[in-house]
Length: 494
Image (cartoon, rainbow, N blue to C red; front, side, top):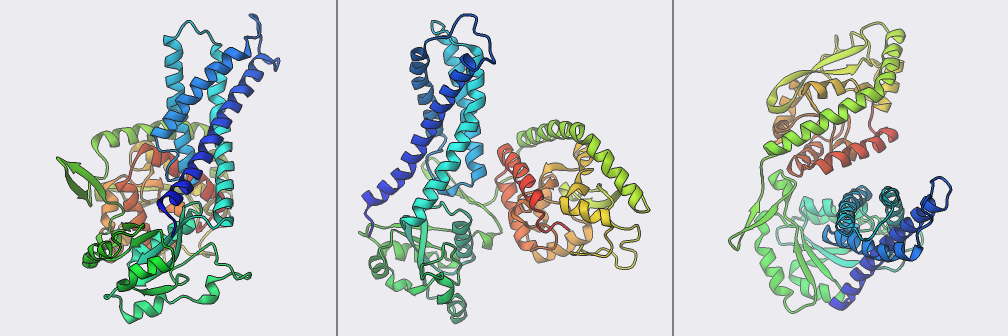
């Protein structure tokens, strides 16, 4: 079994690589800026070139400030547990804060005079250099993790839906230092559970006989039952045991903890959030008493103000920039098919209030005359030729920017549906209507995870609830950036 020291060295290796690459990229940005400002010929140097030594000495302090900010904001922890977008947003926020602190320091230490244009150029270049560094670090660490067999050897206990979500997370974030090696059953697992979860050994191995990088619930071998957990941990050199059991099996947490006492192994419990129809549980401590929050208010009053101001500013800028494109698309719709340019459809928004959502018309005028309200399908015969292009590129949604200006919608939020579908889906999902506690959106957390069109209502609802329970302005910006990527791929857009 890997010792605590061994696991510590593995975690330290990740952190050291990230720290070294960040510092190298920051110093590279500093030196590149020095050359560009004083030697490239693009800038006048009326007072002469300042000595490099003075600038290098100051760079040491600047790098220390950046490192401190990144350390405090957790940029060197849970490396594999963050997506690339999370990493880049963290770098941007950390670099912005570090830049403000450096400027404040320069103001107080006036005896050190530096070119203001130099610092301006340096701060503009830091994010580009740091982004390149993180990309290189992720590729390097991922290759080392896979090639060297590194990672935390993990044993899973139980068959709750959270086990499947955990395995999906491991596949989605290949840099995550978790290596599931098997699972154990519990007394409450039925024979059908054991049969359904039995692995197909041919699917576990690749052509060369090695275990595949991607592991599903069917790939994971059943090693025994929970009564054998202590011996299985020792035999398989397990570093981490994760309990993915439903709430009615909570006594197992205490039993497994007792069985693993005095062993050098970590134990974690993943609660069955799907049973509570929630996405997150928060632990708070009040007067040394821990409180677990299962459900909280979606957005506070201040959150709503911040979100609305961001919507207005971003949408106004977007409309100005996209005006020529909107005019061209309107002309194409008008000349290629009979009927109005825009199509209005009543949708249900926040608090169940209905509004007219605007889109470019992509179907013939009498599209639902015979069928009534139905889902659009791939290769739907009702779609016009230009409409197919607009739908595939999601350009038909652009007029909804006007809905955002009016306050009917937000840039980011759960996608609105018609009342007939809301009533139908509310029967399928107990918490479906809670999506309407926030403003509907042009795009959302579910959409950027491929859940568009005729996809699982349960999965979409869970993603929407996750968004509501974890909202932040940073999350909205992240979703908008991810939307651009998914629009270019055109998944489930028809």
